[in-house]
Length: 157
Image (cartoon, rainbow, N blue to C red; front, top):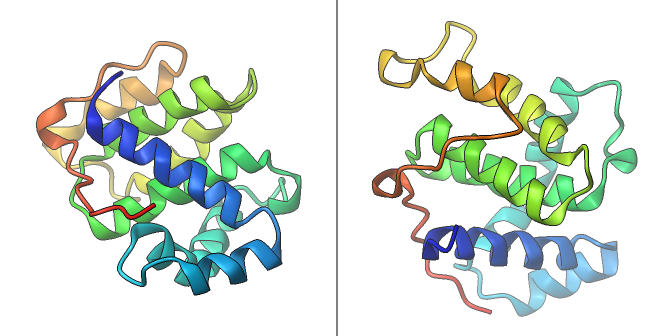
């Protein structure tokens, strides 16, 4: 995917990875990043996001999760909280990033955790029912519809 929104998500995930590599890095990022930047805002709510991720994957403590996978999931959960991007797009983006930057098993793990977290208990709205198929087909996710790919936050390096 060469979509500019996909590239923005990658940049956010990479910066988040760098900022969360250690507590010192996190503190430095909070001081240096523009308070309106996506990464700064994400860092402010990272404990909440982590608690939600841990709740759906209790058998894998966050400290044992591949840090790239964790950065991908944090990025996508933050977007789901702040944008109205369809679940299909969010899961697809996460799977694509996991395939590109994670380990061999990353895409399946990321897909499973995010599907559990993002798909509501009552099921999906009718317009997104097809996500169930996507969740089952982690190896070959559909390409995201760019019209819904609206993670347009201004991003300052």
